[in-house]
Length: 85
Ligand SMILES: [Zn+2]
Image 1 (cartoon, rainbow, N blue to C red):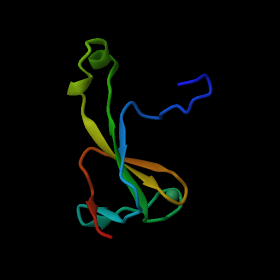
Image 2: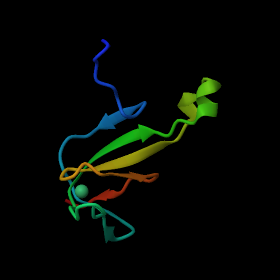
Image 3: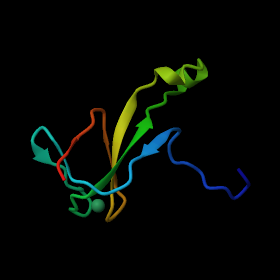
Image 4: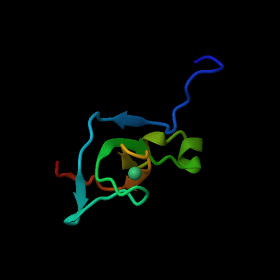
């Protein structure tokens, strides 16, 4: 990566393309910023400084992230929401 290379926001991210609607516990997920219900789903590691120091990044938990396709607001979930559309 060069001096002006693009930096990743998260240590590890796996992005699934396409916008979808989701729900958790029977309720639709709506962006708190703009009200949209369309998100791109991805995942990110929840790295802690202690686990990284011990070289145990593999033991850190993974979170599901939903990125609003309208305003780019990010919502985090420990359990993956259900895709409804
Ligand atoms: Zn939004």
